[in-house]
Length: 223
Ligand SMILES: *[C@@H]1O[C@H](CO)[C@@H](O)[C@H](O)[C@H]1NC(C)=O
Ligand SMILES: *[C@@H]1O[C@H](CO)[C@@H](O)[C@H](O)[C@H]1NC(C)=O
Image (cartoon, rainbow, N blue to C red; front, side):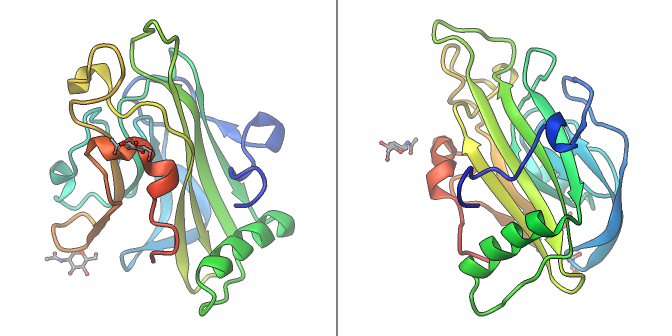
């Protein structure tokens, strides 16, 4: 999005706040419009603390391992890494049919895919805001990651927009990170997965050190 990059989030924007967790999953969330993902329609989603939105069932592992999930667990991972919101930060979600917000989303999509004009009629997005690095307050203070994933549709075409505001760490302490910096080890995963080994998309750089630069290297303009 233009302007403030992030689509609106927070309690003052009418978001629901997900209770603070470590490796937890909030209850199944109902979508007011069914969302089609890899050919299947879902009426509910799970927002998992560690940066994964899943269909069918929760996903709890803190170290990203998409191979674990090739057993029929479809998911979108805007940024799958070990998040502990008990230490700080928040996860919200927003569901809207507000025309002004939908217009912003429609413009962002149409700008990137001018050959497929899109008029959103519904959108839903969780925002993970300044989720700190797990159990570590180093000499640099607290590092935080802030990102969203917007699910939107015009009821015919379905888009998911991973949206990164600020990414300062890639790896949780329990995923073999460098003890000081929140880097190294098994870095964050980002991508889309149908739940099998055939149909998935990994955002370039995921699970490598380069994911730290996803705010500038993401797949904008790549369908
Ligand atoms: C993988 O998932 C996709 C989408 O659900 C489906 O179309 C495809 O048949 C599946 N492939 C296998 C090998 O199960
Ligand atoms: C991230 O981007 C910066 C600036 O372009 C670059 O110097 C650095 O090597 C990149 N980091 C990784 C791990 O790719």
